Length: 143
Length: 158
Image (cartoon, rainbow over all chains, first blue to last red; front, side):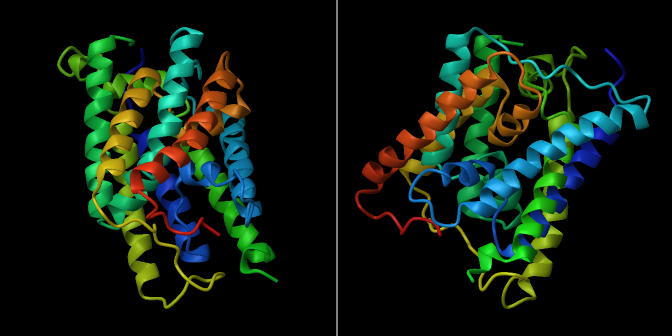
């Protein structure tokens, strides 16, 4: 493995923060991805901007994958592979969907937007899911 | 015309989504292994630990704190009538239970909702399984949340 460089995660994080700030100042909406896709389910009120955001997000990731590695020689992306058996992946997906709906947020909504607003609910939720995720990795030894 | 259908509103959503997705990729949050290697604190002192996620979330929060401050000076957003704050305000059972369940799923997979959707652009093996059960979980979760809240649910989001 190459030596760790803090620049890609720093720049990526700045962009995620900037995107969240743009959506908040422009449209008054929280850039919380679990909320965005969770509300694509009926009743379909103002679904268009959510679809627009999510499609643009996919395009942004694909666009960056096409451009960034060519621009910066030192940038070596990891393959975007999933870990575990299909049953493992299915269970993980179900828990992520359930947990983010019941807790009303995920890494973006609670983790970035909520913490930045100093929301007590977000501090509690983020503290729990980080601690539990770290414990889960330690117990399952999936890495 | 509703505010959400105005071209400027959709342009903001597009620009924000594009930057968000590109940021996720550049930060390598689209690679589940990078996330899992951060969560693997057992490797903290053996050199196998990947601090990426820490840099990502810290820098994202710092920029968003500035964004929240700029927004706080305004009576309303640029292209909408009001700021849509989350409807829930209590630290209650669903908030805690949700964090527990999400934590297990995230620790098993290294995938949270943003990367899950962004990975559609790369279609790695078995992604459709994750997306399918994640959507199912969100759908079921709506009714679980309703039951846990005991009828104290706010009106559905507009």
